[in-house]
Length: 72
Length: 470
Image 1 (cartoon, chains in turn orange, blue):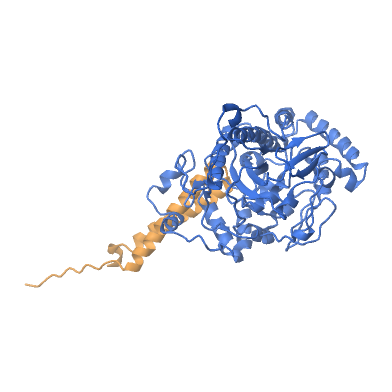
Image 2 (cartoon, helix red, strand yellow):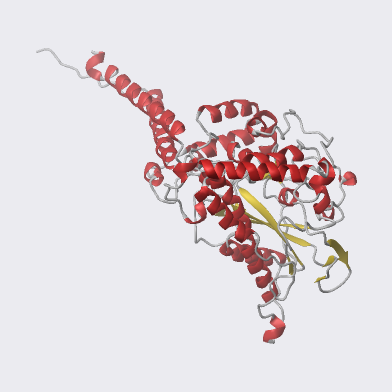
């Protein structure tokens, strides 16, 4: 009977750091977007919202691309 | 020896600066604007510093000499009435006919704007401006209201305590009276030169070796022992001044002056109640050079717009002073990279409609006219151009330079602390920060009509934005 082995590949530590940086950056830009709105600084708020959205989409895309199913 | 670098970045500060913390976003939604990564508000905590000094961002360094270079041998006490252009000095410096010509043009423009209903200068705007003017022109007392009971009246000895304790209780009282910042300096052979020789009303300010201050028709006498200066600021409304140079905007300046009269009177009565003298401004802008005293007492740094810029409020304050014989713990000047940033920025000079502000890269010793006070290295302004625009352009005190300054920011978005941190620590990026300030739309004029639709807090200011006690 053939043996079936399952290999679990841990996420490299560098990747965890990058995801943490991404998360903190998202918090930073979200805070600035909301707070700039409260400060009635519409241009600044718009720029921060755009950066937040682009970063969010980029993160989602990277997550999907690097998901285990895609790496088979 | 300089105290530069004395404040180290603690672990807690670092965490705050990094914006770490799961409650960060939630904090954004608090009404007080809590959530700054650096200066978390801790209202109702106890003073930790013996003198009640506020904790400032760690990049605000205390230094022995201010960032503005001063040659004290060249500094002399000036006559406020004849040197500055706010009063008769304008005729002296620019010709006797000019004040009349400006008044005539200004009156015509005012009428035209009222008839047209020009936004910001229409009747309701003029009305709120005039209302604030009433407060501004109220009574100020050099010797104080002198109605409060003294310790002698109450049959007890006067208050005694260390200079630190004195500073602390004065800070506590004045913050409660409405002051934004309270700092202290001592008049010595150098800083006494920052006192006017004559007040705006023409009365001579004379130091005498007497016990009690007094005032006559010709002079105000300052006892030599009244050598401690309480320097304090009153906030102006940034959201309001974003409408500069309209009446809608500039009425907040008058409002700050009006509130200062009350704070001054209260403080004078408080000092009297302790058994000490409090000598205030007998009229608006009296006693001494406010920005210079603010710089020497560490409230802020001198800037291109020739006013003080504070780390906490930027230029959005008016500065006042009281002399006292109550010994207090004094404060040192600061360096937060502000004057250095002014070298690159020039946003105020570019925005000034009368081109009164200097475009020079470096501050100079050379003054631009008799209205400037020599002896310090600054970006001297052409005050005649400035006041001419007040009279014939804005019809008020303009304040465009205050409104466009990159340090004029609310405290809600974290980015402002990061930028201020960058300005203080990486001067090479000053030009980049200036460009980003423009790109993000800061300093652009807001619609004066929109102001009437805003639900602003009392006085249009946030009173909990200032400082965390150390």
